[in-house]
Image (tube, one colour):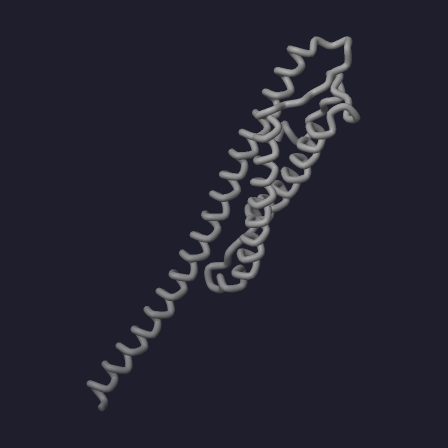
Length: 163
């Protein structure tokens, strides 16, 4: 993701003068790293056909992690919205402050939109894993039911002919 290494020091926005903005960017970087970690776990999770129950604890852990990430994301998003409602940025004198102001506020807005999109992606990936788990559990139940029905049929036939 492009936002992961967003460097704002090259355009004259000093951290000492703009702690709120830098805090939003720093928090974004932490959250996007956590998003990346969780999404990698989701994408690497393999659910076995014959023993899907082993994956249940992994799925529960992923759901807990996503839940916490969503809470942290909402806090961050609300902070961004509050900042963008009344942005306060201080630039070095040698830079065009109007253009820089528009650039940074628009950039922060883009980061917020992209992160929202990423949160939708991770939610969809998690839904796909849950559906895969349910599907494999249902498949296992169907196999067991078919096996028991076949055994019952064999016993019934044997009972009819030899009973």
